[in-house]
Length: 354
Image (tube, rainbow, N blue to C red; front, side, top):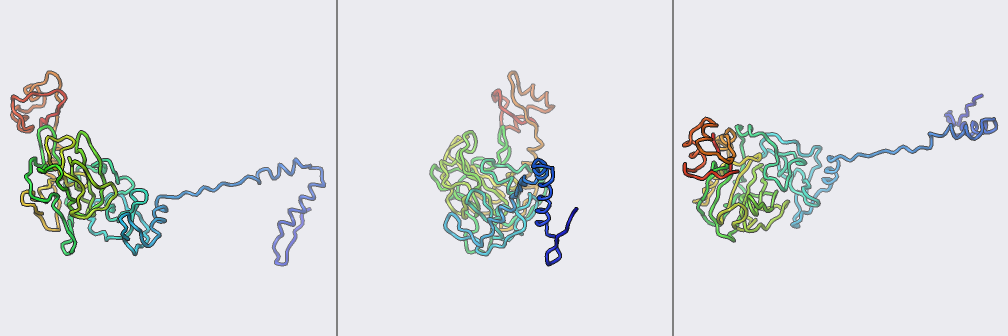
């Protein structure tokens, strides 16, 4: 027989009912085994797993109204908590992003203005080791993009020449013998000051023995990145904010270099275009206004290089044999590689054949 016990509010008193039921079964012949079996699954604890997403982590970091940077300055005193973190990379005008919307942490305890990252998928592309980690198809080189290089109305330094005085360009951008040259080489003396061209954040500061030597790569707010190679040393570190004209290293002759010089590159979306389109190294000046239109013409040589065909020299190869294999002429091979018909073909070297 079941009984309902009600309290003054008319609700069923489950506790009193349960107590009466236990007394009933205890006096019956069910025994303790029945009671244990009845409540066997009731004693198990349900574990609740809380998943903290990267969005939640960032939002917690943004909760403070201001951040104290490593240089002692307070940046973005009034920060509005955003509902979205930087979106995956899209071909957009980064200059439409207003400054100081939020900060992002690029290294433990190191925050920078999110406008340095807003054109990229932050979690996949902030890389302190690879010059071009973006994995973007070279087909985007045919697109045009408007870039604001600097604020022409600002009283602060808008841009800076990378060197303290005019210097001679010793090697131009484009095809150079057996490989494509992604920047320009400018003569320097060992120990000369190397300066950041625009305001930015250091993305790479490392040593590359068979390439750039001691080099620094700076990301700028408009999405451009500048690279400074073959230095004798760098005096900055990854994640550090720098201003236009700030010294980031000293001239040198490290890495794959045959004499003291600065290897200077300007890249967008990971692909370098001719720095001479922006900088007149002989006159030590910027050739263009603050508004710059980056088009396929700036990438003309690089686009051509993507259509090129190369051949790795093997034992027994000759210019005649290679020209017959690829249906081209010896004269054209020599012209493409800056060599003569008498040049020794070294095994393992790569030459361009088309």
